[in-house]
Length: 99
Image 1 (tube, rainbow, N blue to C red):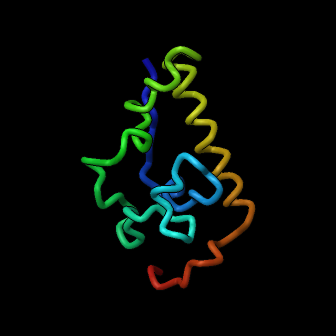
Image 2: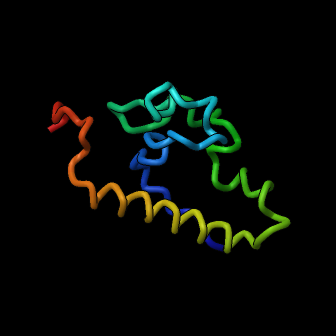
């Protein structure tokens, strides 16, 4: 059985704009209100919503695809987000303070 290889980059938590499912978590800037930009981690990770947990949210897709297909779909979505942002260059909202 596949596992989602989360590297805790935080990109999914920083790009919620336009995603209706995550509208309640958006702090108004497209970033999750529980995302800690300094640590790049979730402040409520152990108690995060089911929709933020790849394994737990599979219940919504189990009638549509196998678990391995679901994980592969999420891996692909993660890679696409990283590639899109990489093609845009340095983060335009990054002030460089962490360097």
